[in-house]
Image (cartoon, rainbow, N blue to C red; front, side, top):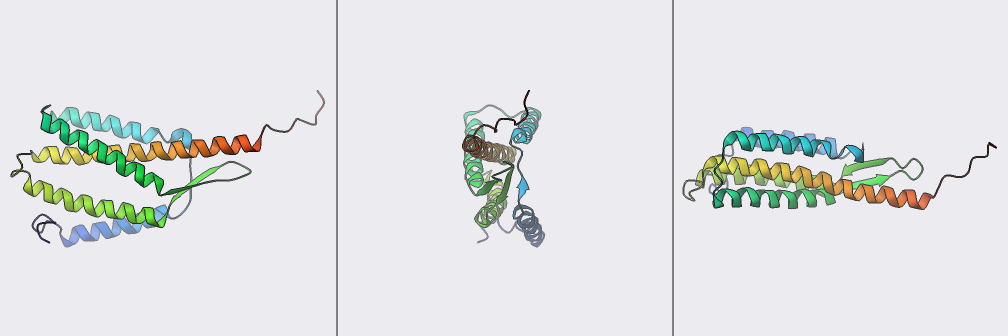
Length: 183
């Protein structure tokens, strides 16, 4: 078990932090929130800009190994984000066509599992980076790329599903009735 957690790098304070984060995630995600699909692109765009700035600041060499690490992190992050978005329940009000979303209980367990896996995997990879001839900074940068890809893919998938639901609801509702006022 010590090998899984990077020779004991998971401390009691890390477990407390994960527990507090889990309680916050559960409380935040179980209540429905209004979904504004026209703004879903905003935070991923900010995250991507910050990621580009961070990558430019680290001055990572463009070796095949580094490109493979960052590309793999992007693909894995996008897959996790897509799956995470599938666990989000989206509801549309039949009359007002307002959209709301909330995480399902399975989605909350999925998020928690990803957080625990990320902490354990990060410690393990950083501990064994020298043996694999991978710079530790590449591992940290890879996790940053993974997080940005996950958030962007999740928002894109929620936007795609919500847009489709809204279009279907508007088509089913039909055109507004003609005005009874005589012009």
